[in-house]
Image (cartoon, helix red, strand yellow):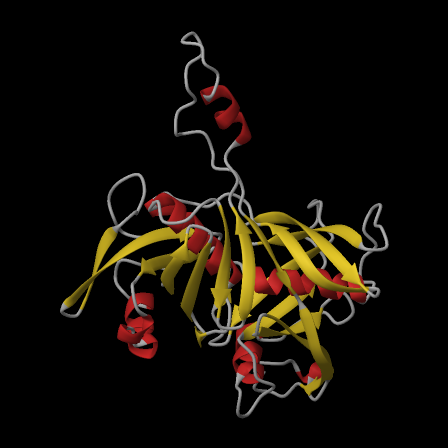
Length: 325
């Protein structure tokens, strides 16, 4: 609900998308949303019939005090639930703050700039590439994948959740679970024709094994360097693209020995290039051919996942805040 002092205030916004995964962005450097019910605002403006229409709301805010970052990303899904992270969304945040001169990055060049964005999973570093003076492609260091079931979270035993059974009605599916700051369940299948996403997606999202719900991805593999995915996004439903989901798909594919550590992932809205490089230290030491040098155990932290893809601005406008927002 809005305080009376902000009733009927016009809120500037910009609609942006990464591969069709669209959000409404609000520049909270210029317009703090003091007193606004942010989950309610997301539900209202995300409505594709009565609102602006989007997969959710992303606020571009000053970083928290003491945090070394250019800005902070605060994300809400279309149902008003808080999202920890959005890979397509964060690319658009980088584009917005550079194209609209919200921040001035250190040592930029004409065609490239690096920014740091605070998220609910920490501060992530992004490299934005310009064409004709505008950002059109962004590479994101998404950080290491989270593989421990308790931290994903998913209620299964073991050190990882790889090829685990998930019973849905009379059918048992096989899943691998990964967190990229938000939880993902990945299902490798042979044929999309046998998957009813609008029925199976909600059943997976709300399954009792996932205490915080989950994003569900169904994937066919064309080769070790190419795969196609369809997504049911937690809190939003079917989406054109899910950046963190594409990262989770590559990680799951590596863990199941289906994909290499670099692959092109096809999504309904377009393609993302995902990389999960080997841990450099582990690889270097484990390849030393001397018995006196022990191999580094698997407890060494995973290397980060990198995601590269487009970011596009659609239009800007003003939304009149009402007592229901």
